[in-house]
Image 1 (cartoon, helix red, strand yellow):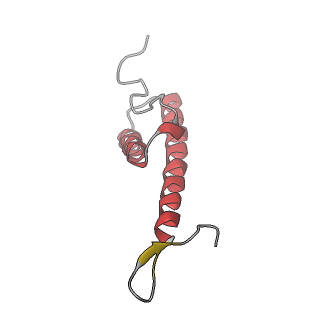
Image 2: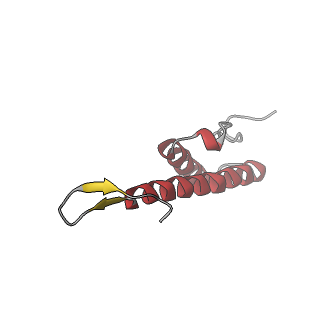
Length: 88
């Protein structure tokens, strides 16, 4: 038997790849708070840490993608804003 306090309440089963940046970040913050609280059993804390690490990588990837898209927006000398290919 397990009680509600020992369960991995902050660990979601949603596939990380399907999460938006905001959803992944919110879940990561939830995991950090739960781990800092120190109320989870070791097994659940490890599972939460592993998911948190995967969420962190997902957020970093999403952020890098957005940064690349923003960097592709350029302003020409005449003040016209445009885009350039990301492959440059």
